[in-house]
Image (cartoon, rainbow, N blue to C red; front, top):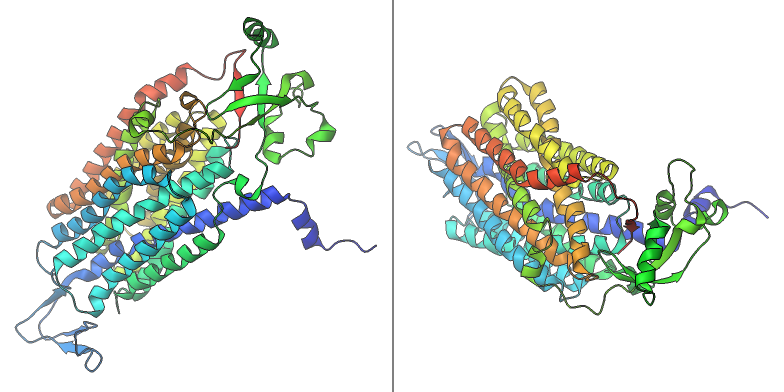
Length: 549
């Protein structure tokens, strides 16, 4: 019999469940990357909406009116100057552009609180598909203002508000879906890699918008709008909300009994008890397995990595019990106030408010800052700004790996926030010294600013959404995610608005504001950091539980 081709051997080396997990990982990555891809154009186009005023007698290109198809080139008379696209051609353009950002982000923040609650009561696939179609429509509508020569400021504000509301369907939906498919083991690493979709979307959005920004900025919105709507079709056709929908088996829960005597005492006091409880589900002991090197090969790789005691290589057979959960499907969705009572939700939410303030100020204003300081055109500034997102990818993965290794989410965030403030000060200083220094500081600042933001919105949200205080309620993840990200979005709305108000007095003042915000984010984590440092590791006799939910 002929040997199997290498490619086929590779395919068959993974189980059906592993292939489905990889598929959902990639699909949700691409779906949410398209959301950020459609948000990025406004920051790239700002440099085109307001430009340095053209001198008298120059030619104004690419302004299409009702006669544009017959005469696309319009001359400026000798007594006119061209400062961009009205109404952003006035001296108060920074306030107007800041108002556009605020309109989108304020609507996003308000809508996020409602989105998680609604999302838990509707099928994720339908809810997410609707959001992607609607977001594509409103993103495209903003770009149509160029083709139809619309100069009404209210039109652009209303479009931004509507787009901000429908974009809230994305984050709670994809986090809930990825949480259903991946368990707590190595969650920080998995979520860190997965959360790079934010930076990948920003990079792609910058490149796509930058391609047309100087020639036809309307297409900088229309093309991303078409892309996210097309991904909505992909979502409707392929998204699988939960492993049980296709009868995929969940990773079993591994319970390590560090003190059999303590467990025996517990059973002695309650001899009729046949179940255990952890942060996500109530569990019934179904069977005990003999864990050996031979049968460990049949276990999921994530479980194999959990069955090591570091000294002897394996946990003795009598110390291992396999438990399976009932999923908690019969429980009602958690209320808003109930989610706020989960320990850590308020602290991480307030921390994210200030962390996201910093991140979104860079997202919406970095290209214009580079244009003003380094005197690049809108396209070059947009391309250079993508390095901040490259640093964000590195920072998100690094934060996940460190927090997994140490088991301390708050401490990891705190360390990066502590280093971010001086990095921002250095960036404001060296960005005036040349291109090479700017590139280095963009990468460093991106890693330190986006690292805590990425960790809180993914792994931390998933941890809190399956907290032990929920007593098996598996429907809380979407609400907890929406509360944390919604509170963060308040900061995301304030950051660009404050940047627009402060920047006329000097960009240095904007950076001072960002450094203060970083310090405030760290302040809200101090109690949790102290708690983590005081409670290092599990005490003997406690259950260390790992479960895929």
